[in-house]
Image 1 (spheres, helix red, strand yellow):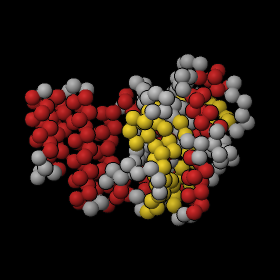
Image 2 (cartoon, rainbow, N blue to C red):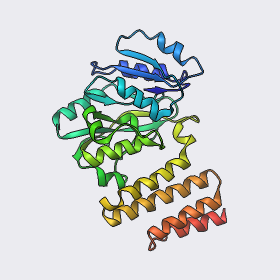
Image 3 (cartoon, rainbow, N blue to C red):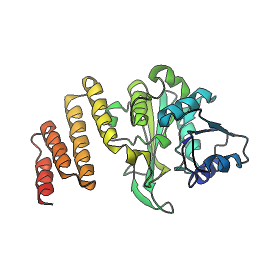
Image 4 (cartoon, rainbow, N blue to C red):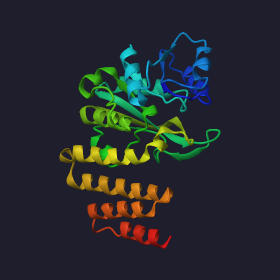
Length: 282
């Protein structure tokens, strides 16, 4: 669990881990230089399974997670952001799934975003039960799996193939899951077992433009491994979403530019043209 100035949420997050029906875990909390009372709050938690560390310098999320990976002793590794929550059976069900499918290197779960009192804003998947065990690389680029890092469990031995987090890129948690999907089969548990908190200080909100540019880089990097139509469709979706986000941020010219790039990847689609027309009329 990387954390930075999360005094408002971190105790609730820790409690969601303490309530897990699977109890054989260790929690490594990596404080990346908090300036509020996060450290004081966590040191008061009386649980021998929890270890708290303070990084010597500001490392960013990727660097902080890498420090945690170096200290992790277990065969399975999970991540949770210090403002998210887990359903009580999350670890139990994912561990059982990995035992059932020893050929899988990792597991992801369903979940939902929330703002207040665990009221769902939107769900990661339309279905809420069942599982999928398969090669998930192409489904990744078809946007058929959620890449929220707090839903992930993977076998630590997979790091030999995929390496640690790349500290030069944002948001690298998505790329880590992509690398896992490239080298290993995976399991999706569609049940909503992760509750992702939305608030103004979410790191994903702060880096949303960089995130889209990084998404383009990832698609280009894997383009030769994908069916041509899958790559084009992935780029189309990304640029359409990029444009929609620019509209939300009231940057009309940049939004239209993204819609135009989307159209170039799918020239027979009228959707980008409609979006451009509506943007002009706003």
